[in-house]
Amino acid sequence: MIGKTGSLFVCLLAQLSVNAYGDEDSNVQVATIPVSSDGQYEYVEVLMPNTTTSEEDAYLAISVRLPSDEAYLVGFEPRASSNTVHHMLLYGCEEPTPNADGRKSVLMGSMCSSGPDSILYGWAQDAPRLDFPEDVGIVVGGEQPIKWVVLQVHYRVIVTEPDSSGLVLKLSRGRKMRYYAGLWSFASWFTLQPGGDEDIKNDCCYKGTIPLHAFAFRVHTHALGRKVWLERKSLGNGIVEQVELAQRDPLLPQGFEPLAEQFIIRPGDSLRAVCRFDTRSLTSSVSVGHTHNDEMCNFYLMFYAEQPLSMQCDGDDFYSTNERSQVGPVLPEAVPQTLPDPSAEGNITVTIPAVGTHRFHPEGMGQVGGMDITPDGETLVVFHRGTRQWTADSFRGSKWEHITYDEPIAEDTVMLIDRRTDG
Image (cartoon, rainbow, N blue to C red; front, side, top):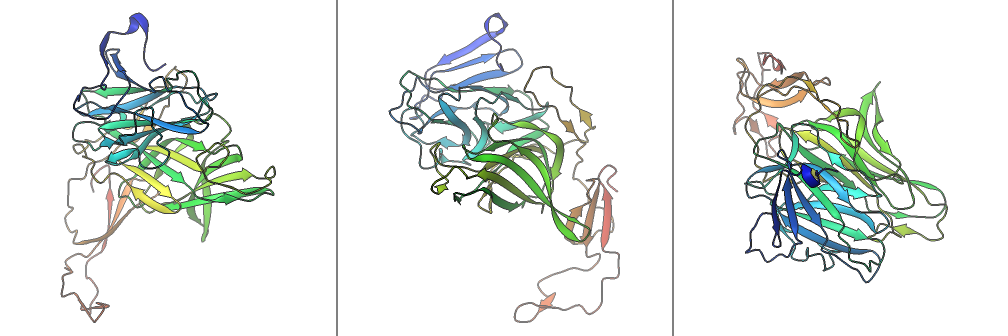
């Protein structure tokens, strides 16, 4: 369990019927939310309010207000059984949908009435809990755009006895994390035909500006899925190759798994999520849909970075939902560290590399035209213009296709910067 029980609880902070952190003016109904603490972390239950359903494949949701001051989500403990629940998704919102009251259907539409509508966590098939690495968390509350969480629960069967499935959230308050956890979700739209194996592919290019350090992943299909994996395009020996980064059988518990080999995603990287389906048992086509008799193809990649970030790749379209995130202070130089291997099953251990600061303009550097980083991540490669200045008068022609300069730039235009020494 994430939360400690019985005499190990230092205190029981509250038993509130409005929401976990007050806000009695809200018109959004929420379940009774116990907030407890073990002296280091707070634990918030996000549970369905003794829910029943009248049909299979019902989608219901519950919303919970997060702390008014800044905090970090650092772990999730499922409280559900696959005998009743097909899957659960946790969303981050500025304001939740009014339908997130544990009773109304939330099959169609957004989980948020305002804010990022970001997927923070997912669960299916009796997956275990997830604890983040030390100094990594999802920033919420305060001035952040995520002020509420909405838990969407897909009930696969008719529920006649009151059900309180859900999650326990592990919160860290009072100190800033060094790294921000984020999620990149891949989802595909498709129709499967009977007759054999079929691969569904979803390609996206990372259009962000900072490296992402991947440390865990989750896959999701329904009954026909046999393998789900993530690839990265790599240029080797003059040809483009797809290099497999992570894979899992989707019929196993669908929780977040630690990566066998952690990797870094850099700006411009092209990733592909692939789902393999066995359709030999079909007698007619099957499409993507919300019931357990339909299919899905999802890959979720969890990472940490220097800024809050959440992304979606939806049928080759890339969306980023961090535009309103408030970034913390410039990070100090960090010493590479390997986190201790926790004894509790389900925890994730990750090696965190050093992160440099960005605070200088080297002598001799002119206007910057482009930047890249070497494959080892140690050297920044900067293309600049030296003493040459590009202005509105630097081009001519009806389509600005002609440069007005006749001579090449006299200075060296490529600068290599070691991120460890700033030089």
